[in-house]
Image (cartoon, rainbow, N blue to C red):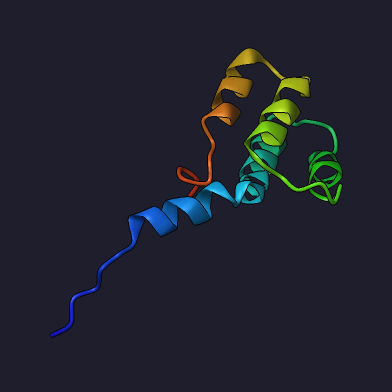
Length: 85
């Protein structure tokens, strides 16, 4: 029987480079909050060609016109914590 060995360092490195996956979670929360045109807001963020990273996601969140509680919820989303559920 073979044993599966995970390379946690490589997994973490890959996740750290995939902040764009957070856009789906952000969009879902914005829809829940009845934010106007959440898809278009995220589209503007994700299609700049400049790339998405932790700083760009956090800057985007801070510019949203939502409550501080919603912003706090959005700030907790990372590639490491988002499961797609």
